[in-house]
Amino acid sequence: MRRTPRKLPLTALRTFEVAARRLSFKDAAEELCVSATTVSNQIRELERDWRCKLFIRKTRAVVLTDEGRSLSRVLSKAFDDIRAEVEVYGQSTRKTVTLAVGPIFGTRWLVPRLAQFRSDLPNIELILHDSPRITDAVMMGTHLAVDWGEGSWSGLQNYHLMDITYAPVLSKALMAERGGLKSPKNLARYTIIHQRDRSEWAAWLTLAGCAGLTLKEEITITDTNTVMHAALEGHGVSLGIFPFVDQELKAGKLVKPFDIELKPTRSFYLLAKPSSERTPEVASVIRWLLDQAGAS
Image 1 (cartoon, rainbow, N blue to C red):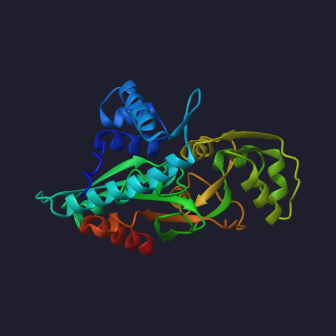
Image 2: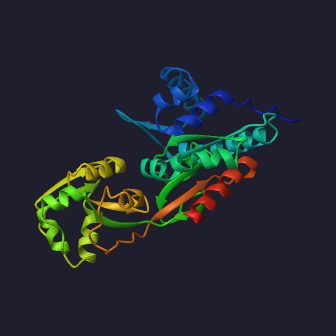
Image 3: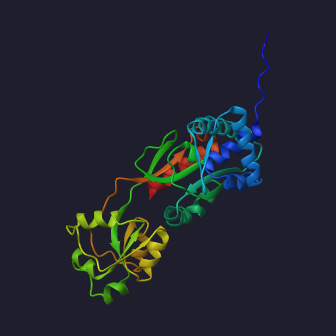
């Protein structure tokens, strides 16, 4: 005698998949257009029915248990496969592709190319999202993402987009005010602008033969675009990210006093879930981004 298959709680599973991807009941509720209480209740029902904890609930966050991570991987792939299949057979002539990018890559590289994108791929609507740091497929909430790393992301396809280099940049006015920069040792007279931490400047000073240089004044800013704006406004010397500051150098808004360039081990990569690549529009956007990166 055949057993009747157990009914799957699809709504609750979908809720869990979003909460696991966002690691937030509140963010999941916003994405699903329900209340945070509804999200919490549906997940509690899953945990009760399956007799295992899926999340560890903390004061301001939730963390997946081992069982939760395992279920999340399965559901993420399943919903991606369903989404890809539906999009393949969709009737709309204009397809949507979602792309997550960070602030510096988005504003300095992608936005100037959006007009070209619309001209080259008029039947694709590109929706841009803020990109979190991505460690594996569970964290991917978009078709594609651009992230910074060494080329290893669990469960994701990755394509090398571009390398960058670091070199000090500052405004002409600030350099004239402080008496110029004939040697890297002269940086001791300037305010140094760090991004997030001091590791990149420490590496550049070591490369320039000035390891351990005592700096007069230092400030730390987390947002990359704000770091660049602070340098443009004459608040100090920052490590310019090339090629993203080429335009400011050509326009004379920033000066690059030294030819010493630090080449980090990490690069920008384009990330995609294997299931996303099956859709023609996502494949087209991948090719377009790689072509643009090659041309630049």
